[in-house]
Image 1 (cartoon, rainbow over the protein chains, first blue to last red):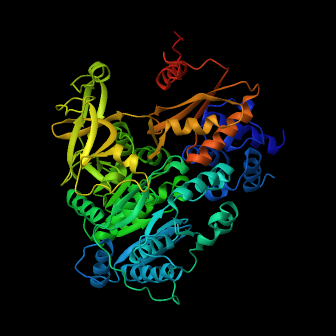
Image 2: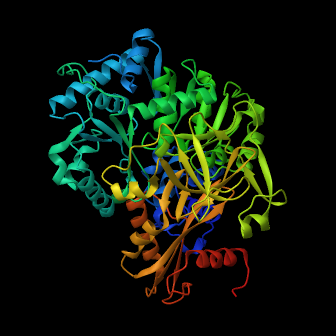
Image 3: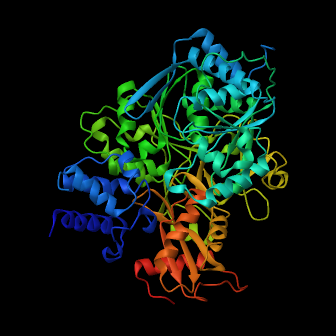
Length: 83
Length: 551
């Protein structure tokens, strides 16, 4: 498993837990709009979990420019030096 | 210009003359902050007034303000009032709302309001010109609106009963109601409310609330200006993602008041890391307002921040609405609000509040000075204490009506009483709000009508026309209501439709649906008259969620 795959697996698990959706339905192209319950308030708990898991900081400004789960994985890979 | 007329502007002029260097606002944005004194506020507002006049605006014209979180918010709004123009703060498009429906909604709203001017953030104005071309010649960038070099503002005489500004409701853009508020009504309200909570020019309010919302506009901006106090102003979008910033500015400036919708108490408790050492003891009141207030949210917040000096006596409740400018009732600052333990059966089956078990109701406090309150039954008669009915309000600061909506005004404002649509009861002369008479959904402190959400959803391809239903379900963890949409469709792959529905409702109303349930044709529950039943489908949804088998 590559680092990117590993990040993707963890991100998908975090999103599935945060918004009570089936992990199988989440792909790199999935965006917040595709996930009912994912709004700017509820996404803060997701951000906290990802920050703890990857030991990084994700600002709200940065998050708002990320278009989908693939972009989030890229952002984390870059922030952790695993890209 | 007459100096004897008491207006919002004359109050500002008095403060600016007596304490010119007093901070009106410490405006936080990104990593920086800017302090705006009362002298600078008045100078900037006068410069903006001159620009409004040079653009051909005349007293009574409507100016809509679509600004991001920038100091021009204050200069353009107060400047418009200085020139006798009627301003209104409006939400601006967020990046997730770049949708055709957002602009179509605005085109319909502008057609009804016919604003003389749109004041737009410099970085948004090209987008506005592109999507609202019919109004391009009425759009002005806010860049430099409060700077030097413009023409001096010509004096404008104002009367206390002149409409000072419009406060637009939330909900579907095209159907927004513009609540007309006069200078006199605003001052009578802010004076009465200041006395009720002991607010003065020495106070400091911390706020992340948007100014297009009545709690941000009245409790934070107007109460500050008319009292000569100080506002700590955070960007709403930045705050949601970084809620601890509110607590940081409270501690840094020793803030004394903070108004929050109920969900924010939960959001702060759940999303702020650390906290030990942060001192929040300067706050005299965190005031919960603008959506159903829950005792559980207070308890979570008080537990989480006890180490920061937060006590139950700091946590207060206000019942407010734009139609009465703001506050109707308020719990006494310095005392814990009352919590009633109520018998569930008497409450649900008979509309009575009796001591017992099953439901907890948090008091909204007593009417503030000048308020008349009635609890009205289905027959229009007054109900005794302990009986649940519609809350009707009379006050010397009621609104003048909804702008260009006389029939709606006539429906809600009758014989000097505003019929709120809120259901509640009086116990020991304190008000308890128990629900709504109509299909209003209050989520994250903003109002949405179920029938408006359904109309938007019904217009989405693949939803069978008219075959959808929207309702709210409680979310104790989030401290607010969450919105569910059920829709009938023949589409085999539901994923694209779920996205389209989320996009359409977000673009038209600003609401992010929490759950979307797609059903085959003919499966939503109907009433005996053949209409889709919100209540029956909601019950079915809640039963399914909790594992109760279908009947």
